[in-house]
Amino acid sequence: MIDRAFKASWSAIRRRIAVPCGGLVFVLFFASLAIGQKREEAARLVFLSPTRPVIIEAEFQTGRFSIDEMRRQYAVEVFRQLDTDEDGVLNDTEAQQIPVSGRLRKGALRLEEKWTQVDIAPEDGKISQEEFSTFLQTALGPPLSIERKANLAQSVRLYDDLDLNSDGRIDGDEVTQGLEILKALDFDDDETLSVAELQPFPLSVIQAQQESTTNNSPIALHFIRDQSEVEATVRALPEFYGLSDVVPATMFPTLSDREFERFDFNSDGNWDSVEIRKFLEFAPADYVMKVSLSPPRVEVVKGESDGTTRPVIDAGGVQVKWQARSNVHQRFDATRLYLVRFIMSDNDKNGYLSEAEYFGLQANVPFDEVDLDGNEQVTRDEIKFFFSMDGLAEQGRLVLTLFESTQNLFDILDVNADRRLNTREFVEGEERLLAFDMNQDGALLKDEFRTEFDVTFSQPEILERNPANNQMEQSRQGRIVNDSSGPVWFRRMDDNLDGEISWREFLGGREKFDELDQNGDNFLELSEAEAAESLRQQ
Image (tube, rainbow, N blue to C red; front, side, top):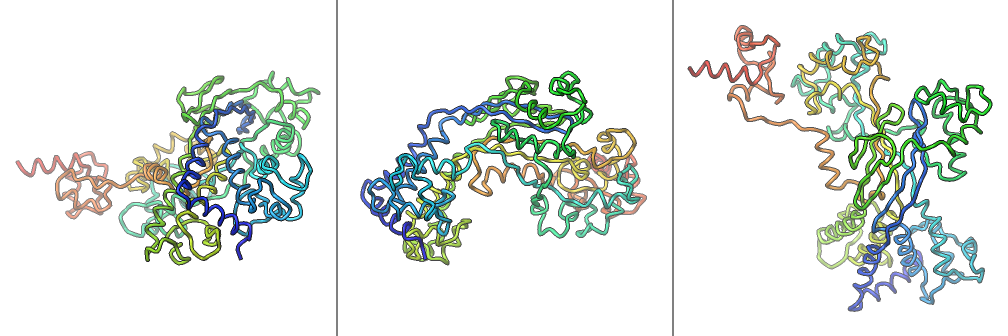
């Protein structure tokens, strides 16, 4: 049973769309967003690195697409839907239908009798457009927030399987013998171990590389713009460093004595909650940045960086990459995508989608939410209006997305980044291991893997998987290249397409293999195959 307010308001909107100038509704709807003035917002943040808290001050510039303007436009459209009698105000009955979340979704919680909380200026028994816009600002959440992105990582079981003596370290011998140790996992018997083969029952290599892992550890990035955010960070800081309530100076080895003592008011070598609060409020910024969405760029005004538009800064010994990305186009792209899918899904070409045909839209929204008039038919106008509005609500805010990635043993050994480990990579793995052995004890501990952070300033993504992201993802995943160079016999024997032939792949005798293996590394490389072919043709 669809909400009466939705049904009545959509009927009114359909009448407006049906007239010759009805298309102007959407033209103005989008055009008004393009004229928003550039808005600047300053924010103070703290990044909790393993060795010290780093204070960052940033000025965020949204460019043409003002968040305030987008929210005001959304408020106008939602108000218009709720105002079923079109008298310019919401009466008692209409105001009860205001969604608590501010999002126009069928079945969403409504204010009902609590609508009077919105009637504040003036308190006259009805809701004006201005009162509704004020309510919506709070309902849609803060215009700028911090989110943590789920890690899309390889949960390969390589480290623990190679740790034969269970001492929590991987030494050179364990890596060198790796392929022999793990040969039971080489399901396709190609003398390589792929990401998929090292996963616990993945359906594909892509699934294996995109397994979402929830990070339950305390978040490292916090806003400290006002008193409430400072208080929340005061509580979070000791927990982040695994402490109870006070933080000793020894916890921050990269913070100078002078910096620590400045806020250690009782000179006891510790910071209590009061001293932590004063540090967060008054410590000078380590970095000052200007972050812009149009054009997307990050400029470091104070502090050292690599000087690019996507700078990497050293935050207490941790590398943090900052970047800006405009996703505003996704709001239009998503609507266009669903309109194209509408045409493809309308099998009987009757101008609307039945519930069965609606599945072809591949939208993460139930059929009855897009069926605004509840007639069990989803039309092109309903799709255009719903996804335009829904996208506008979703992107009526900005987010700083924190992504944490920790290098793993697989990445260290995978020299050619083809997402497979071949025999040579295992044999030469000991040398690679030494480059990451920070304490130079000849073995690799889990805490020696380097952790890096990415902070991205953008609007929320609407398309779950867009083509641009897919292409970048594929480039990171690497690929196996079927190289057509080399003698025919060399290409045919190279079963796993790693560009060289192992003794197992070689179809001749051992004596002949050793003769061709000029450098004695137990592999026939392309240069050795070409040399052999040249001698054969003489």
